[in-house]
Amino acid sequence: MPGKQLVSFFADRSFYRKMLSIAFPIIIQNFISSFLNMIDTVMVGKLGETEIAAVGIANQYFFFFHMFMVGLGAGCGVFIAQFWGTKDIKNIRRILGIGLGSGLLVASVFMIVGYCFPTQVIAVFNRETSILALGSCYLQIVLASYLFTGINMIFNFALRSLGQTMMPMAISAAALAVNAFFNYVLIFGHLGAPALGVAGAAWATVIARVIETMLLVGMIYYRKGILAASWHDLTDFTFGFVRDAYQTIGPVIFNDICWGLASLVYSMVYGRMGTQAVASIQICNTINNLFLVILFGLSNAAAVMIGNSVGAGKAELAKGYAKNFVRLSVLVGIGLGLLLALTSPFILRVFNVSSQVRQDTLLILYIIASIFTVRVLGIMIIVGILRGGGDARYAFLSEGFTMWFIGVPLTILGAVVFKFPVYLVYGLATIEEVAKCCLGLFRLKSGRWIRNVTYSLG
Image 1 (cartoon, rainbow, N blue to C red):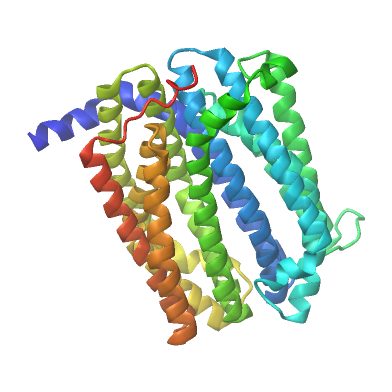
Image 2 (image 1 turned 120 degrees about the horizontal axis):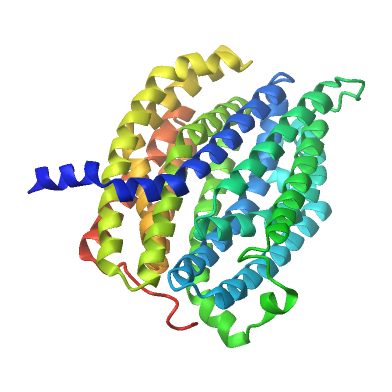
């Protein structure tokens, strides 16, 4: 029987066609984004370890904002995917309006806090005088991009939930190329521009975000598609509609905020361990994200395909999709883990860092490679299958528990109590990945993860 299931899995052409049509553009978009982010890190790294640490720490504030927006966009995406299963355009536009309004409000709060207290924000992670000065400078400039980032992310998640991934991919690629170009010009002072250092990197990010958002929104309304909603379409909802919607959106937001807060605690712990530890973690995160782009594409495809099926009342089809995505995740995780382990020494050659940072970074990358399959499977279950099926509450509780009751305590113990080197501290933090994966598999086996969340709204 297992052999027949495997044959069916590899022979299911309709599954692969649908999956690839959604996942491939997202994979390309995320790959370009991660690759150019790595170029950004390399460019800033040419200025020195202090500069790379300062930008990395300043971006932790953006990271927390980004995680809130990811949660908001993904929460709205759960509804949009399921509403699209019944082609309910009216409610899709209502959910889009809730997402845009919430996103602009959150972006405004983050911008005000960042402008008023830049030094205090940086000091949460590191109190070295040079990093405080450089990080505050970078933060106050890059805050101008937050409003545009918020709008862009909501539209991106909405388009993905409809299975429309080609346009966001093309626009993101163009905007990221703009970002890389202005990094080259403004960081080092090429083509007659002043050499602005980390401030140049911040201005490049702002320019790219503005262009990306204008292109995306402009194309949506030019094509007059499903998301080209009027002001009335976007605001045609009651307080009760918003309240019911947030019963699902809320847990997704809290899930990503919980994950983001735990990541901030990790950053604070690494920040206390010194500039070299921060540099190692920053480089590892950049490389790790580059290898996760395939998984992010697959998990988004899973959320859309499963969400469309659940919304259309096809529970058995959703279960079949979930099984296929679990198998695919295991195969992808094994392959990417091996690739990361083999290529890490060569990738590190492009970074201008000390021998100690290089050695610690390589050991962390080997740890990442060793648990890559578990990490991939956990993300697929939480972000793809459970959210697509409407089971946002369990996803939030399982991820929140493993991070805050396993990952965070072990990281603090390793760094503060036992004074372990950074690679061992990182290794302790990965134990929560194993626990999260086990809880996710248990939920899938129970079959209680399929929930049509549109019933209370539509």
